[in-house]
Image 1 (cartoon, helix red, strand yellow):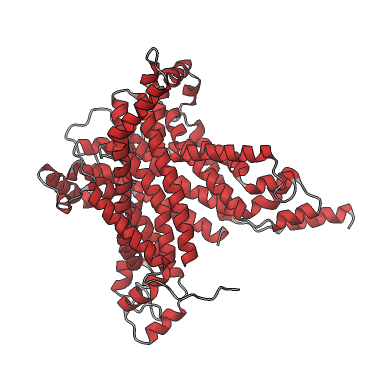
Image 2 (tube, chains in turn blue, brown):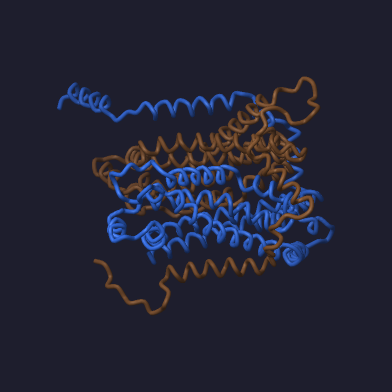
Length: 304
Length: 288
């Protein structure tokens, strides 16, 4: 191949690359959005150059963020240790337990609720006659129920946990319930959708055989579809667990007794050293949940 | 070859054990918290709020609910539009900064980077391993702190300003994106990069043209999904005084204007739904 031929060949290949108007316009739209957002002036980047802010930051890092116990004259490392140990004994340990418990109960509720939502919104099940092709599939009540449940799932997951908890808090007061139900609702919406997608992806051959033998809708759902989808569903549940712990920490900012409660409390008293300790504790909990979720998912995958 | 199936020594298989474990953990946690199911029935003012709030669900507001609106304030729907626009703007600036951090961090955290740029299997030097470990530690630190806690830290250290808000979004999102980018890059097989190396390729070009294209569609798809999450987080930042959706939602709820609250909730849901439909259309075409 001489250079001219090679150049032509490269040009031909370049012209015949797969192209898509959707991708191109999506890219242009997102780029334009980013550019508009950066120059719109809504975000004041000039703040980042304000010397007052930087001296604020320096004071925060060099004074406020350091444990008070260490700042006293003649204080040694042991005083810092005692400060941390006292906070852990008095508040940290209990708040850590509460955060973990809230996310566990919420995850259990979300898994249960999500599995009902998944079955009730799966397109392959919510048809006049499940799994049989060739019939008119959009008539009757079942598809309408399926569509309504899909909308419900969207609403549940589109509203953030924090907003759900804020709304529920005024109805139930400061028990753990607003946090638990908020986490359960949001995650049930997500698990419902992921579960429904898994059910729709289930290869239908064996299920058709069951159907031909006379299994009804409930029988198909409970004995055919659900066991087959369960492993992947469990993977999704553990994947969400990690996020759930993260969010449970933060819901305490609203006044529910998780780690976030003590973060907010320390912030209100301007005890920034305590605040950093509790934030650090939350970070450790999240990293722990991250590792636990990874190990559990690996186990589920191996167990099939 | 598949291992021969060993009969289960137990009435429960591993999956059953795991599910039973999850259920008992949830029940145990329930006991630890001392929850009472009777508390789930709202009482007193709680019942009043509950009734009024859910009664308003089917009648979202189109204008201000208050009898007196200060003169000169924008119409309700215009305010809603502004709040939505600011929510989107904060989210997209946050995502832009997050992507700017996630791309280099994700590259450096992946094993493929070190293989491709240093030539050959596992030729990482001690320094390479150190850099990779450090980058991974930084990423873990960034994402283990929730964006709202970052926002509180920035409020305390840097004061209430919009730059703090987008920085608080960008740090945890950057850490998460970087982690997933690194995983996606490492999941693509090394075949094409090995072929390019055999043909004499090496260094950065090998990584960019041999390895990255295989992961690019998944990376873009995941970034789009995180953008959706950023919209939700940006809305919540309003609860801390930033002018996004959460700010107005919070205020309307405190003023007992529940129909306005529902309008904000529906608007957020529609925005998320539209983004989901968009990303689903993109995914259908490029990932599947």
